[in-house]
Image 1: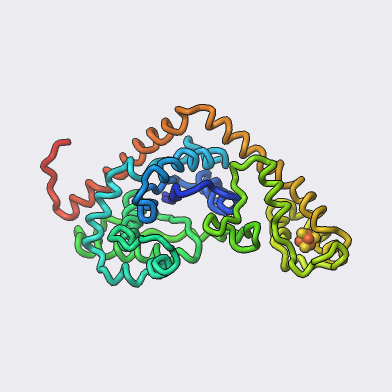
Image 2: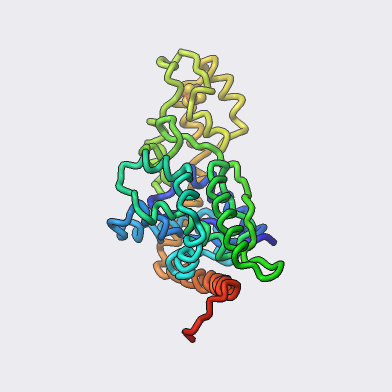
Length: 333
Ligand code: SF4
């Protein structure tokens, strides 16, 4: 059984794109592997350092979304990153093994610097791939579920691990396992405006939104812009609504394709029939989430239990790291 580490930042409410991608994937992984799912609050600090209360307000709702989507604390360890101080400790040590040039050439660093209109030009932001490496290596994770675009990040973790191993080898023995990517083909879910669904575009369908709100947003969702009048034939390939049939009603797809092209169906009816299929899929999520939130102690207990389990593993790794380095511990704490 492989060990898996994955995390999500608590920076907003989860949307349908997360549900169909990351959460679905977590559901499969927890049945097949030993999983550590982390609420990555320290990573969120790179952008929200001026007001931690925002991050705090998203932590428990994030975990309630996980539970509602079927993530099971009996199967996976669910914990908050800052509850395991070894993340910061290992990150400090690994940062000494990481040349600055490895960080400045990180494509996400450049891209975010150019595209985010917040002052994120901090030491922590430049060094966040080192914290990411610590997250993974602390659990000796052998598999890291990522999309193709995140491969350079994982490669950086692998390079840092190799460099540390190189300087701290004991005979043939290395401290860190070199993790592999578990490449996930996350579906590209489009938002109501036809662009990729993303909080920053304000085009999301939020998982925890009431049924009426989802219906309202779907009714306003962009369709094939060339289809101006009801009797204009449409092209489903240019319609974001049509992509939802893949996820929620694949059995109706070929019919809709035909009816759209011949103007036998109007967009209003097309959306209504899709919603009939979508809402029953989202309803159990909403119910389970409401049940979870009705028990205010549940999530703190899960996170407390998860932190204990995560720390046990993290402490073992840190003991090994120090032993291999020859870093003697004088404290008995
Ligand atoms: S009929 Fe359906 S698939 Fe065709 S343009 Fe309208 S919403 Fe899109």
